Each structure stands twice: as structure tokens, then as C-alpha cells.
Image 1: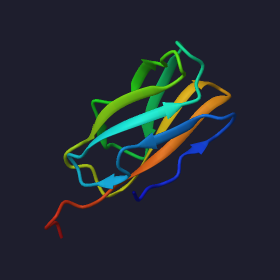
Image 2: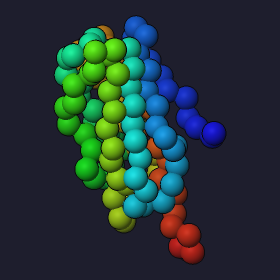
Image 3: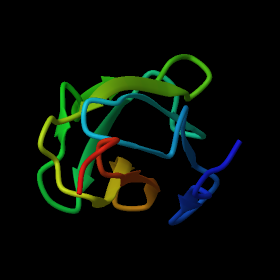
Length: 106
């Protein structure tokens, strides 16, 4: 599985995606781990427009894991989108998704 390694900014949080690149329209599952159990985790993206149906708050399960599905927006330009998982200022993880051109695009 190719991928961009997740980076725990502080502590032992982890972040992963079920795929790390794809064209606009790709559906992606983001997972985070190592968060405080049963507490809210904010999931956001940076890197320009490109994510629909994702982001916002979700609650960590009793093991400190989170999951959120999102879709790369149609028309998203090629480039990197960074997905951030944040529970507080010192409980943060991130990973990245590379938006590629649609097949046949020039």
C-alpha cells in the first residue's frame, strides 16, 4: 500500500487514510487513533478547496479511535490536501492526500 506516513504532532496519536491519492470524486476513509476515549475530535483539511462530506467533529470511541468518510470534490485541482485530527492543542495528528488529475485530463 503506497502512502504518506501520518505524523503525530505531539503525544502518540496516529492518522491514516484508506488511500493516499486519487482524482476528484474519490471517496476516502480517514481514521485516527490514540485520542482520549469518548471525547470529541475535530477533523479539518487544509490545502485549498477539495473535500466534501467530511470535516467537523466526531467522537472518539471507547478505545480512542475515530473514523470519518469524505469525498474529494469534483473539480478539485491537483495538489496536496492535509487532513488534521485535533482533540486539543497538544493532541494532534495529520496525514495527507494527493489529488491527481482525472484520467484523460490534459
